[in-house]
Length: 461
Ligand SMILES: Cc1cc2nc3c(=O)[nH]c(=O)nc-3n(C[C@H](O)[C@H](O)[C@H](O)COP(=O)(O)OP(=O)(O)OC[C@H]3O[C@@H](n4cnc5c(N)ncnc54)[C@H](O)[C@@H]3O)c2cc1C
Image (tube, rainbow, N blue to C red; front, side, top):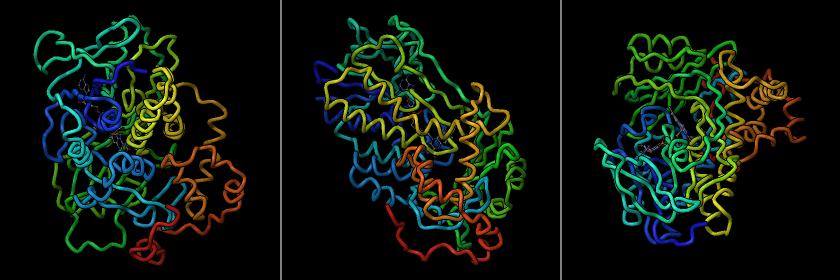
């Protein structure tokens, strides 16, 4: 626990950093975010968040937590054009076990990623100081702890100058150099667990055709591993656009060439996405992304940990992005940071909590990725195989049973723990679900399996 609360520094101005800065502004006299990019001042993608070119959905739990930290957030995003989808009913969703019925269950916010960061940055203006175009190169030691960061102007030679602080949050994301910074202070490298599905994205924006009225707002066509490895998502975003993200696991990377991209879309498990984009106007180049491994750094298990320093967000744990959980985990950790700063525990305790709140998402993402034969990682345990068999049944039952669907989406949205899928009432419904009631593609397309009436509230949330 920091002794003095004059100044806190956050490394990285992406989502985890922005949420941390909001929390710290409640507890410290001054907060400075050090970000190596120059921020665009518009809702555009920037080099430091290359994932911004790809589909981002915010599940309910993340939405609620961000709303709690920035009241009015949802309204502001929607006013800027971010669509709120009723899930799954606004979407045609092909799961590994077939098409899902269009139940009224929950909500999802979708957007071009730049809009999210730009909105939150706007809300922080006046509350935090921004040092953009500065790269953190190390930590300033003080006794058994950290007394700030060393930062240099990007592109300048040398290690840089110290920026003193009572507390430092490392939110430097997927490319974090934290183990090296800690090694310079004499700490051993943390153990890492990596589960790599060898999955690659390719994405592009399309103009939603004028008068488009297919009876759905989003398409989500999932792989059914190990038989198939390709997934496609077509979701609306601000500006009347579709974000189309294709992905392939097991080195079947989605391609970035014009024809190959369309060809990949054509070979998804349903032709619907291909048929939607075939004649739509592309608005951006096709952009790829392949750094999708699940990677967990076990800082919580190091024998010693410096005072005044914590790591959160993707710098601590990244997930295969296809399950859409990283932002919600960052929000859970930010709320945990707030609770921790109100208490009297040491920094190790926070690292343990941050690891714990990431564990549900980790279980889901790695469990699913281990279904691909090519996934690289630790040997698959018998327990994982048994759980995966059961989860396959849950997915099939969720396609036809509204309550199982609600429970499954609650787990994916990190509102409930994965273990809740094993509770007797859920288990009974899973075992007795009538899978023959699953809709056929032609029913969904013809409207014979309609979505609930427009404006119908998502019940239960
Ligand atoms: C393709 C893709 C799709 C995704 N889709 C979803 C989704 O649908 N739903 C979801 O919830 N999550 C999704 N995610 C995850 C989500 O993007 C991240 O979890 C989220 O951005 C939080 O990351 P972060 O803030 O910890 O780190 P990052 O977003 O990686 O940001 C790190 C920041 O730190 C800065 N930085 C790095 N090093 C330094 C340094 N030395 N000095 C100063 N600044 C530095 C970088 O410039 C950057 O701004 C997706 C991720 C990918 C890759």
